Image (cartoon, rainbow, N blue to C red; front, side, top):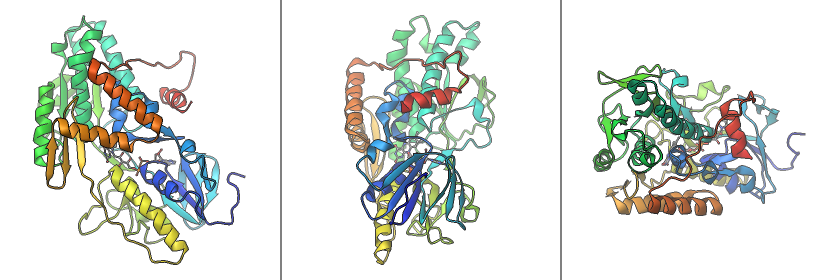
Length: 433
Ligand SMILES: Cc1cc2nc3c(=O)[nH]c(=O)nc-3n(C[C@H](O)[C@H](O)[C@H](O)COP(=O)(O)OP(=O)(O)OC[C@H]3O[C@@H](n4cnc5c(N)ncnc54)[C@H](O)[C@@H]3O)c2cc1C
């Protein structure tokens, strides 16, 4: 028996991220049996991954065990497993623990990095907790290796960092690297010449933060430049073999290419005919897949095209949360024979932070920057984090970092010598422990 039988209809939710977790919360202790499936046993607060990667926060401050969220929900059954296939004809999903039947299926699998044809083994992505830890290890490891490099060229390649993608993640990461260069690393590595360290931010469009206002873009640019970040616009990275990168005709030696340049939907085999051009699952205004009355998709993976948003809503946490919440209400309405409510996105604005004291924020026509925007950014992120302990630990870390100009978590956690498991598995285990 993988899941106990129930007199209530079974809703299988694939993915315990922003969308899936919100939906399951909405339906806890309601007349449904909820089966929540995720390949990890924790919820990952992706907006703060870059702080794990730059030694500002521990992973367990931004990840939260899903079992803990639902421990008082008698109708929610969590199973840690990866779903490999959907079989709509037989109302079944194939998983690592065998097939699971559903009455209603909700796909909330989010998105995955899009490398646009580049070799992923050469790039440093930032999408998951293991990747953030791997990036932290990599960044710190490169400074250790730079100290013992055989040549000045090799040393340069170790301490030059190229961040590809000028969206909020790339901007925040480049800013955090700039702060590490200015305030943290020279104290740890006094033998290295930090004037030789370069941080590049490379963006294909004609401005950074292209989805935000021009005011936010130009402010963010000036904040980053003050931290020493070199910005290259209208620049596409077409090739990288792990040693040097061509930036507008200049060969920059760098072993550190951090990839934040794009994501694509993490859709699953079995629903190919429902995929749009972008690879997202096309849904109607109720997040339902037209061909199947009992299958829904929410969050990043779903494309709800409308007049206002012809290519679907942006892949953002508030969209995922709001869709999860409304679908919960709609499934209850469906059960009671009431008409469903269409989704309307309430845009709460967008923001990005650049180092200490500086951020940019757009709320409709209001554009905020500097210290006030930074305070707002901190408040919003603390408020949205899951779990009181996480909120407290993150706040304490931020206050500590602010007053000491330090990042306390500069540990390089290496794989055990006699173990055969991959680094990613090691980290996942330590995170889940
Ligand atoms: C580095 C980074 C920074 C970001 N910063 C911001 C920000 O500042 N503000 C903002 O609004 N948005 C931000 N985003 C985007 C935001 O995180 C996403 O829009 C949001 O997570 C989407 O929620 P979701 O529930 O659709 O997907 P996710 O939160 O990604 O959840 C998907 C879940 O599905 C699980 N899953 C996937 N495939 C399978 C499978 N086959 N079987 C089982 N489980 C599976 C995953 O493990 C995951 O738990 C950021 C994203 C990244 C990567």
